Picture 1 (cartoon, rainbow, N blue to C red):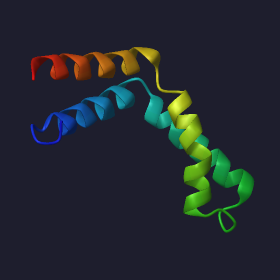
Picture 2: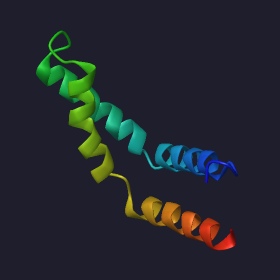
Picture 3: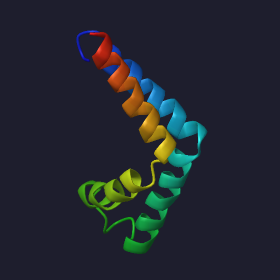
Length: 79
């Protein structure tokens, strides 16, 4: 995937699709809520990442996951 540049293409497709469906905006709002609850001065980047990562993974739409998986399978079958 790396040598052919397919990984970068998949990452770009994923970025675009997540942005189009509003996932990025939702996660950004979730992040702001976490910061508000914990306090800007009391939250570290590590804590923030640990807190939002499960939320981010859990909220990726199934159709985007399926599309990504399909593109990976097609790539693997063609090589």
